[in-house]
Image (cartoon, rainbow, N blue to C red; front, side, top):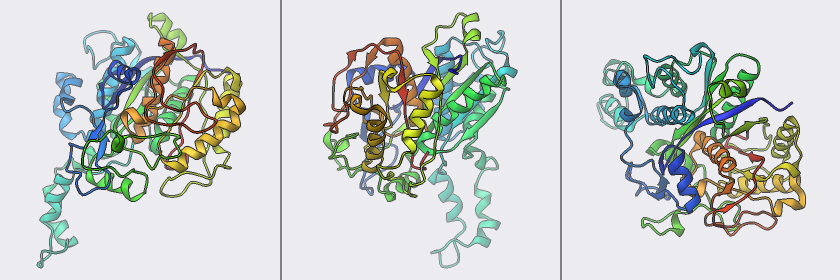
Amino acid sequence: MPSDVVITGLGPVTGFGVGIEPLWEGMVEGRSAIGRIARFDPSGFQCQAAAEVPADFAIRDWVPKSYRKSTKVMCRDVELAVAAAAAAVADAGLTTKGTDPDAAPSIDPDRFGCQIGSGLIAADLDELTLALASSRDESGDRVDLAQWGRTGMQNLTPLWLLKYLPNMLACHVTIVHDCRGPSNTITCTEASAHLSLAESLRVIERGGADACLTGGAESKLNPMAFERQQMSGRLRTTVAGDAADAMSVRPFDPAADGTILGEGGGILVVERADVAAARGARPYCRLTAVSATQSHWTDARGLGAPEEDRSIDDAIELALQRSGLTPADVDALVPLGSGVPGMDRAEAAAIRRVFGARAASLPLVTTIPNVGSCAAGTGAVALAVGARMIREQMLPARLYSAGLEGLDAAAAPARPATLGTVLVLSTSQGGQ
């Protein structure tokens, strides 16, 4: 049976800024936040573009004054998640310990859960380099592990590791907002936010919580994480200049040759419909079902599965079945649409098989051309856009792509639409 859970708050953090309004405006206006990387010198990389959160972003603006000291042990990924949670809580109209410690909370803290998708966080190079440099052997050419144990590690702060554990996103968010209900961290690349939403739905349905903060966030915009993605062959080659064509992502386009990274993600507030009604909240939409499958074909680099792989079909069909819906009931689809050719081909083949001839007229809404691939945060951005589409009854603009035969995926302006049901889909580098 379909669930009785609603989405009441949206807190995306993207290259457009913090909150649903800048993201929605950028999507509707057909803008891209992708540009040349400024967070580090990208001149040694074949891909030199990304969608960075605006330079004026400061985590101190998104935490209570009493919590600002803790920002010293937040890596970039944690900062993004904490800011996203603050935006989602505000958008949902919730009162928490993080918004007003002296006021009664909107949700009983013991009934407030938190599930957040995270990536495999890369350490800050400046911090790590200082410790390694002091661990060189007598030749100065190699790191001596004995020297590392004697002196190198002493150049890392005692709380250094706490900055980079994947579960620290949920840890800080739950402390700030006093969420004492079930909490979990899921690290499944682009599928992380969707799987976190599934966990939140199940927690609420089984009676473990009345509401949850859910989603995902990640930044791969540091040299180590960026290099891993380049070595995987997933990133497109850009040029040192700022030509729009060189910095574009073209989902479902036969000429597509890779994706471009972004940083960000988002947190959503999901809660029981009766709880939301009791506090006078205005839901964006109802969450009817979530399903997941695992591809047997995916390779270690995540370049896609053969088109005959049916795992994506199974996920879509199971979600529809659990919702009590048919393919004909879906009014729009927000796919991953990464621009990685193999991933796009597998996704497109599944869409055609499930929706048949109707796939050619089913509107696809892509987010990665606008804000880049935010890894574990990508799904949260897509979910936020899908929920806002239902409220606004509008399809945002699509960028760049010439489209693929049999899919409604070519570049198009924003336009009104009748949207009763929106399907949000993700494949992932790990095959989920």
